[in-house]
Image 1 (cartoon, rainbow, N blue to C red):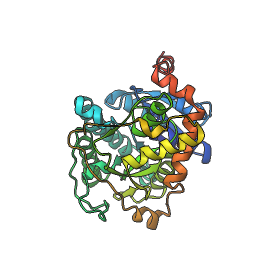
Image 2 (image 1 turned 120 degrees about the vertical axis):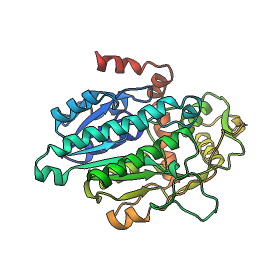
Image 3 (image 1 turned 180 degrees about the vertical axis):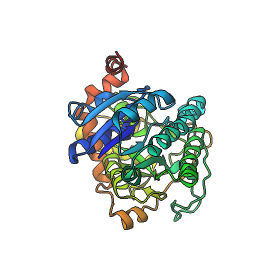
Length: 350
């Protein structure tokens, strides 16, 4: 099959594309605007494949989305393109409203028109897979509660509110127009090629430079950590085997307090790159972010029961692989930090 993947130059999108090109026989069309978070270097290992095509397109540009659909004729759309950083959404929510809500609406309408024009067999097999986050559920009060596919939405940040809006749009297009939509909501991802503003890569790179390791408040916020390559496998499983109209929660079964995550990274670094002063001494507690959710935790039993997916990595194995990857790819990190990776972007749009 041929898959159109929006946001394929981002962290999760690039992992999905690497998985599909490396482990399946399917074709991929990568549609990405290439904002600051889009990095084509993350696709270096597969970009030369004859089964991979890149289109630099903004999902808000209806004419260009229509052109891509007409030209490439995909069998499914996996919609990952989104603004996704909570702190940025607090400082500047407009971009999140535009991309996550208006962009999703534009893509849904383009997909609906394209789907309506397919022959009966291709219409039957077509899928629109909308990829979202567990942050749409808000936070959990009880220590034993879990987010399920029927948990009520209660987003706390401009980011999670915009993703909740896009989820509702996707489901409405399925209910009203019959578009074969699948929705997935995932927990916190981590792993190779993660943009350095996010917690885990930020801690690794700051520690290597003996810079402070900022932890919001007490660091007692709990997240369920999902290794990005496990997530990529799950997403492919859903788009190829999932049932239209269904929602699947994807989690790593790895609940950790943020302070535990930071301390674990420090201990692995102390083992792999020992220094006289312990990396834990760099931990610095800073003022908590506004509206910070305390606990997220996913019940991923449905996708395991119905589609046979479960994560292969524990947090202990995944975080070690992640730290080792960053230690072995500091040149990639440097190009992101100094902005030189954007030259690849300029070359792609030339």
